Length: 93
Image (cartoon, rainbow, N blue to C red; front, top):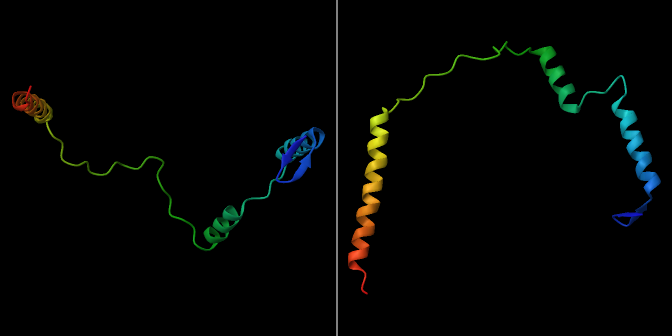
């Protein structure tokens, strides 16, 4: 027996509910959701403009050349090495 919020549900009832869900999923006609009905009503009055499957990509931002990125990384590594060396020389033993 399972306890669901104060209501006791037997294993048999749980299996019956699962069967009902499978039966409902296999139904030939399914009612559309509220959102689907709302959009269908809106589109009947004012149909949306066609949208291409894959639109052309917008303009890309300016690209940095690879040597600039390499210089930035190497500069950061050098700064960290110098900072660690400075801390090491300043540390009292």
